[in-house]
Amino acid sequence: MEKKSRRKFFLSILGGIGTLILSAWLFRKSIIRKVIFNGNFNAENLSPAPSESDDLCVLTTSQVEGPFFFPSPKRKDIREDRNGQKLELKFQILKHPDCLPIKGAVVEIWHCDAEGTYSGYPEEISHDIWKTAVFVGKNGVEENGQMHVDPINDNRFLRGQQVSNDEGWVEFDTIFPGWYDGRVPHIHAKIITDKDEQLLTQFYFDPDLCDEIYTKHAPYDTYGKCPMKFEKDIVLDTSGEANGLMLNIKAQNSMNHPLRATAKIGLKTV
Image (cartoon, rainbow, N blue to C red; front, side, top):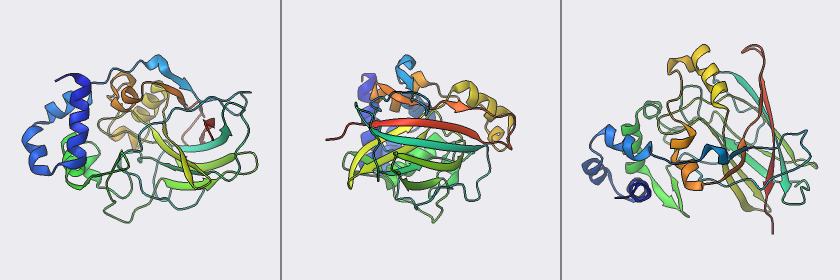
């Protein structure tokens, strides 16, 4: 079975087949890892998102929603009780190619905490690819071409939405995300204008910055460096292009000072 076909087969199993069949085929963690950790993405295609000072915009590449989305509360500060390196995000939503700001866009973000856990889902699956496969295989359903798993608890940390102002800007106070088995570190984003979904995407980080945070600061250092590389990430591999998805982070001198990132997100509107 070719590499692309193996991945599609694996994802279809997670979406529509019960745990018995899943367990019969994926009977060892090593097999799951061989399927998942086998992307062939060209990291040169991962380009930076234009920052606030850049006089341009790009058409931001779309990516999959991921199985752990559910609607977020409207709020700027999404940290709740999560510990970690503070991160201030500022996004400007623009029409592409004329780069005009979009007022009233609903911008929703969600990501895992410093130890790789998504709110609403079991902590124990974050660093166990087998448990993740079984959990998603047992509970996941396919909705409009996207994999989805309903939350199993009432936690809502690191999820939030804002509405863009007259100049198209939204702001969030969060923490730098950790990592979980099978993916490089990322933040999910969904942008909706006029009640129609316009963009699903994910944003990424410089690996050197990730290594610095994950090895020198608690609670990230519980798991250390992320073993996944851009080249092997199957979400990046599936999308092929990754225009405007690398966040430019302004580093600070200590954990007590927040990291900051601004990004212009370009939408193709009709």
